[in-house]
Image (cartoon, rainbow, N blue to C red; front, top):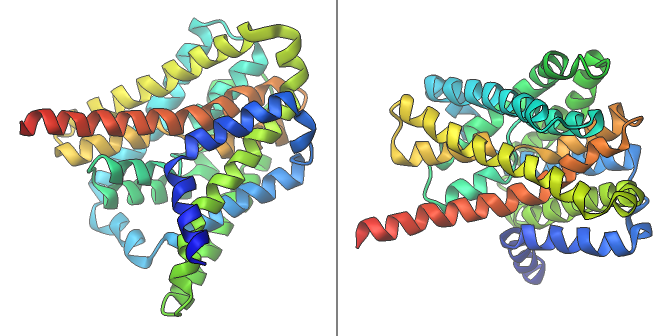
Length: 321
């Protein structure tokens, strides 16, 4: 078990490299992840959210009551900035409908699970980060379908009710089960060991989702060449980077401390692209390329979050010297 715990920590600390490696291998051998489709993909995301729930305690949810203004500011920034930026980029880059749906879906999804780790690495406010993640996850079943209706309703008919139920099933219920297990068995001798395996399991599951996406869009990528990937990556890069910038600016306007400004920047910029990928596959199957921006976001958000955390730490060292 100690070996598995070490492996889990290594996977968590090198998540972006592992996901990129899986994506590269899948591009050359797409049959490896052809099994990641439909219900299987949904179950895998449910496992990711379960791992999140297993690490949450009742104290994490008490933050919502103890710091309501901070959480409200973060949630408003999360669900306003990213959808607006996505909408502007979609029209500015004149994306085709399928790619536009993918970018908008990433923008309308809640914050990513990895953001808590990034906040910890850059000496941010981890309690605030966990609180924002809890709040955005709880709000997602309502806010994501509503925002997709507003931003993407002109592109395709949005099944808001179906999306609400799907998000409820793959996010809220697994998180609730994980929290219940944590509350019930937290005093068990073996439970901390099980918790230590969760980060690695989460990374493996996310890599499976990305592999499944690459397998799905493989033929389109081959047919349309490198240009399709680079154009899509450019939009993902702009969306993610502007999220960091506007998130930090929100923290400055709210007169947050340095730690909280870093946290809200990361929370706003990093999205739950895994959820976006599953939703794209379930609701926009007629537009298979919609999953491509989601898959690229899965990998890039982990990379950019690590880079941003490193830049914050480098700034601290310069200031100290």
